[in-house]
Length: 371
Image (spheres, one colour):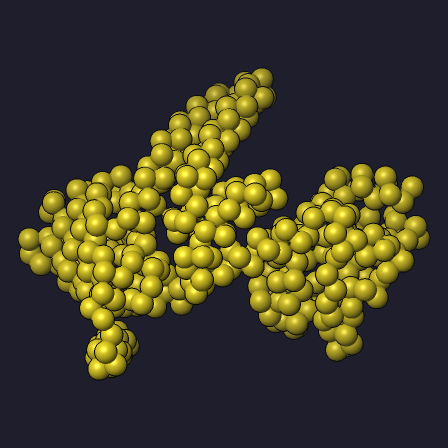
């Protein structure tokens, strides 16, 4: 019943859009063809927004063909999902007719797409990366096939060297594509395999190109926010101030800690790596707090009780704040936090010393600064 309701709502939306005088240039057509016997019960098209909004669900014709037509006002991200669980990501522009031929499953290695420029970009990069991924898989199998722990230990450095080379090879493929095609939305699928700090100039180039072409796309807006924040969060730059409530509702500012070295520690009760790291953070706090070292925990929780229970369970005695907005936390957005645990070390004058220090790296930096 819910599915029928969704489809009816979509039909009403299209009808109203037509009454408002929308151009046929907003129409996108997807022509699909299975060239092998594939008893697909259904094919579903969904918008790759945060909700993965369903646009249509159809049953392929007996000859393996299907057709989906819908309206989109701008270039955006979509996904075809098949009843066997396979899926295909698409980047579609108004006016395009994407022709998809599928020769088998998995689709990733058995399909051809024509008529959609940015989808072909996405697939071409994926094909190049897959060649390296297959070698990575062979390398893992070869390492696992070594019979004894001694044999693995003897060749560990060798295998690690090959693995690192393959990772860098994949990054080079992505860098090369993004450098040559900075305005392609396909970049957004692959940039997360690069380090933002190490490749900031490339991120800035892609960001500028995409922002000029697609200023209203939510993923472009997100990239712009992240790149802009990263550019402002380099060591030596002023640390942005923000204020969030502690468990008692008292507002605590980052600037309240001026005069001390402050570690902003972004974490959450649901983050297992964060919880494993907390004893190390506790040890460093106990070792250096008498030397002018403070910590402000910034939680990305959305459940107040679980947040408070985790503070108590982990014995964290330093100040803690949260607006209980998870990834929408104002503190996390201010510091462009995209993964946790995440740290920012700030000096007594309020300038950034370093970011993403953990474990021994953090310990060595504190020893260098405070002992």
